[in-house]
Image 1: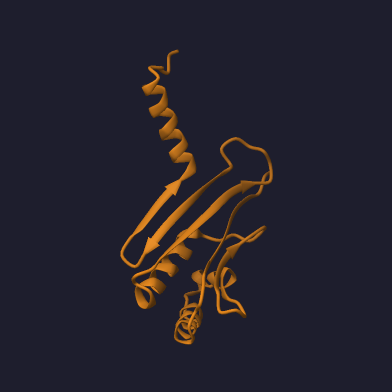
Image 2: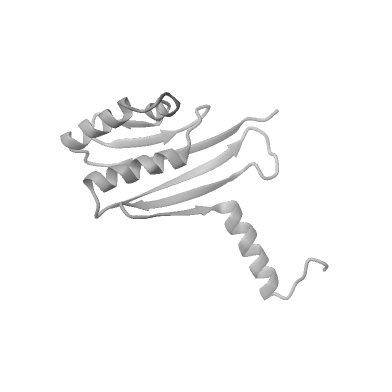
Length: 135
């Protein structure tokens, strides 16, 4: 059996006291199923909001991006945030590695999955080069 991981690390800098109070309140009022966000969203001693998941932990990037968007809507509507993450596996199994990214603003989110991009791009290249699946 193999172990699969999602790993990411990103920051929002210069958290104000007002923002810190809101962040702590938001994380403190999560429902039981969302409590795990406290493991991945922290404010360090320099006033930097850290989003990180490394190693055996399991973080859900969608929840992190949702949290970041709520933060941007409330405090920094003119700013943006991005999160990139890796899909890794403890064994070299086909299809178990990849990555993705999300770009978020107060108004929108955009997503990119590397496997989807690679599959789509390969299909386009083969068409452009006049190759067919039968060749």
